Image (tube, rainbow, N blue to C red; front, side, top):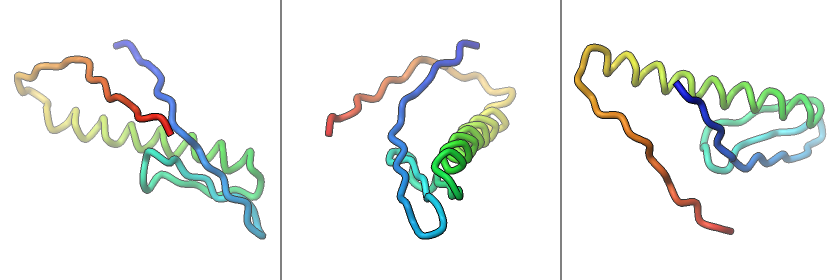
Length: 79
């Protein structure tokens, strides 16, 4: 299976005790770190786990079923 890469927008907010990070295009995917590097690393891990969980759920739901798979593209509006 070919695996591609998607680009998202990570945002980091500095607070008194560290950084909160979130991905603008993925509600609910966020992290916290004492440093921006820690928040960034954890955000990447959380996003990867999110995609894996969704993939696994779909894989289990479709097991043994006759399906059609195709590439799907979403135009992204410019800010």
